[in-house]
Length: 289
Image 1 (cartoon, rainbow, N blue to C red):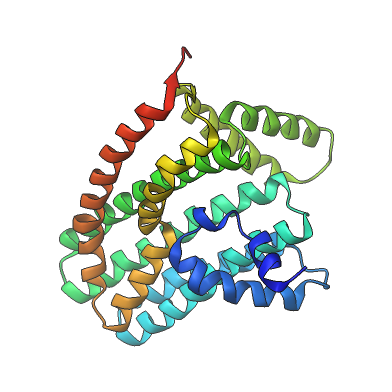
Image 2: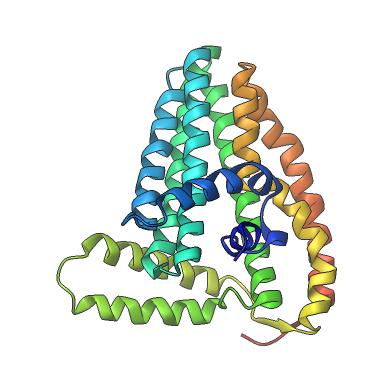
């Protein structure tokens, strides 16, 4: 197998990846994956190291100086590279686990919370106005979470309907419920049991808040109507946000990152949501829940 083919195999799919991941982080992480491929290093171990750098990033930003912003940017870069590595290694070795998918998701949440807590502290140090600093940081954090969540949701639908690479919510709940039952008969594994229980609770909440739908078009038609739109959604993904924060950290204007997330980010979010709603109505047939 050629390196190009192996690289593509390590991705979810080329058309569902964020542009900045494709041109920067995935190539770097692929090289690192090749270097450790024949070792006993597991995707979950890489995920834990990524979490450590994610928490470190928040601590560094919380110091509130340009020097530490630069260190935080470097730490965030490493965190995202490792976050790409774990999935690519799992796909190439075909040794991904259910708990690994859950851990990967929780690490993203914890890293994001850590970074925005650090930004809130830094803004307070820089402006001397705690009220303004935390209001803009909290609004930006919520905005970023919503933008990332909607992109991930539409990407998962795209992967499911076009490539069959993501199971539906009902199937995921069933799959993880079975895993939870299996773990009951296994001693230890307390963290895994807790994470799966939390994931199941979140999935059931998500299921109760959404309508059941089915395709009213072929997978090829779904792809043609959603491919470009998904590419636009990807500019609201977590990697785009991270690169934006790194850029504004270099020029020592983290305040502008928060302002851009709240203004331009949310404007793009609303436009894409309205566009997506129209496209979704044309390709999906609503059914009773």
